[in-house]
Length: 193
Image (cartoon, rainbow, N blue to C red; front, side, top):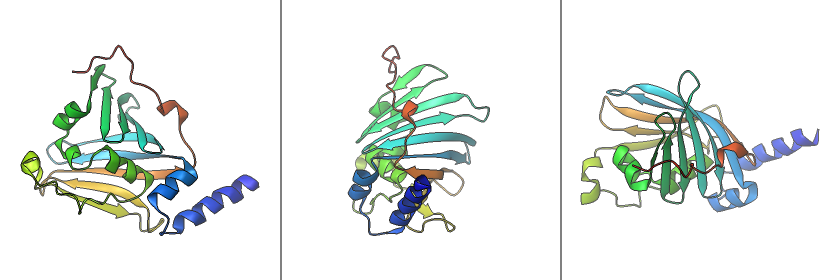
């Protein structure tokens, strides 16, 4: 019975929209959940994922539609590392940015904040410089679940043009819990391209 009470208390605390991001990280230490990434337009597809956030670090394991582990992503601060499990290749931050240029706008710190349920504050950042001139047409929006906590972000939408977009959707999020198996290191024998 005390476990139910504890979970209920966590839910009540999270409804307090005045809780700060730093206080949430300190109080719960971990956050875990499940979701999916969906691409619409020129490249269509859907990958499910599980994630664990520990403070300012995020660990994400993607699976394809038949359940195979396909991609493992680690974010620590603004550093992002990816491991393409199917092809046994690794990618460091600059290589990940080359593969997915929109991640120059929403970096590792922003994504970690999103996985905690907070909206990254992108308006104050001047990212439309020469470096990102090819990205100045990207629109990023964040959405809350109308049936859930009205202060908890559950979806990030990257709109590249009217036909191409990527959505990151959080289907489930649990505070104070983690998937310990996700906090792993990319094997040292993996070659970074």
